[in-house]
Image 1 (tube, rainbow, N blue to C red):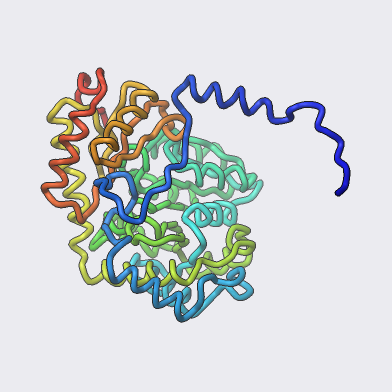
Image 2: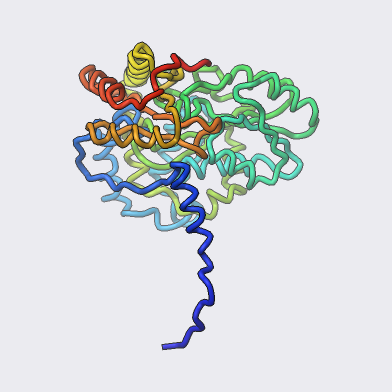
Length: 395
């Protein structure tokens, strides 16, 4: 065995200090493996339409794995593109109203691809302050000039474009993942068109919930298929699978195939995930009422919780966000809900742009009235002191 010189110091001692600081602030995050079958009522996942365990989605995954194998075997440009990937892209683009689509391994990778491939050092990227971390990282990796504007503020976007004068694009979530509020897409599109800029919309939380039959927020806003609009989506939320996609004009998709590093240098999406997503997409096309039901459940949760005095933002899609007095209180609240049989999300800094901790509830289309009532009762029963004294959150 070769001899190694002993390390003179603990080079990772700084991690201990950082961990203690997280503990003091109530910001420690831990992995909690879940069993295959759980007795918990799930209001924490992003399974908005309840399709992740639907027999058709599961069968789609099984059939794809049996036909194409367990993995894509390589990047999309080498061996990782199957006929199944191409079929999913065609049907996804047609459903959402866009000319073409490109499937990637995750929604995160899709946002990195869209932002980095459509901008460079000479481009101005205008980014909403409430955008997801994947958009933030895409802006950083693009090396473009990035201007972060106040949340949902088309007027500031317009002024920012006017001060630049060169190639530009605006990027925004369609539905913001923290409070579940919808972006002013019509206002953002108008600001972009006045400036000759492109609009990139992350529709991760809109697909399957908003628009006719769940066709998404760009479709609902009349922007789907426009030559100056690009959308990104995830396959892991409403479609209950895994992966992401970029939707837009065919020439934009061709450009991404040739330039987007998170596409070119990543292994293709596993066939099982593509098969499940395609099966879910076809199910949604056949049962469009699932989208309206998800929004209805969100409204019911919001109405009953705020009527009892909790602070919540009115949902525009399927996310219901309930304010907590502090990060530690939010953590304890979520733990108490879990002990009482309810799984809820817990958002704390740095995941929340305003620094206010929350419980994040998912309004699933398959929740029954009895389950809605049980969830509300559990949240109210476990609410910490100070959670129910401020009324509804302003919008």
